Image 1 (cartoon, rainbow, N blue to C red):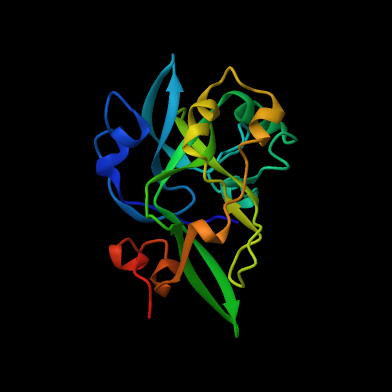
Image 2 (image 1 turned 180 degrees about the vertical axis):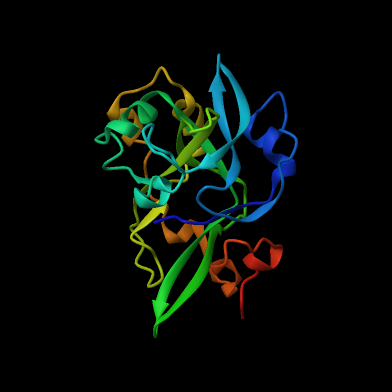
Length: 224
């Protein structure tokens, strides 16, 4: 399950994702985005792409607080169940977004220790993870935009691969994924594919990522 990712190439967000109105103020480099954090996503509104900050983790409408994100694990949604859950069915059909990222973290367990790895594309390019979005009104009446990352079973044979990985959308599929007029399962499932290890770089990194408070470039530096 995807629980952390990084986005630090923010100077290229507008050009990479063809966003006309630029990057919202306050957008910062983040090396350790965790559930309930606020991060930029790309949405399509009236045919135009926009970058909006949303909270990672879809919160059920009847939830009393944001802790349900952890209770129901709605920050990472498996592709094979996303159409089956009533709380997510509308989002996967008509409220899809691109989640800009430079990489994500995976963990393996060895001799009782939780060891982190950073996973990115071999060319280190900025890419889009498949996302869905929604909103939630808190007890004080404030509406919050929320999102989740869609995952798929990994076909990796690597010993440190997780069971599931976030879906990296092919650039040619990004416009289709954003289009709310496209809602059939066949088309959407056709874009939900797992990248193989030959196009990914997987490197052991510092245990610093185990703390949700940590946020520095050193976190993605491979360890010798």
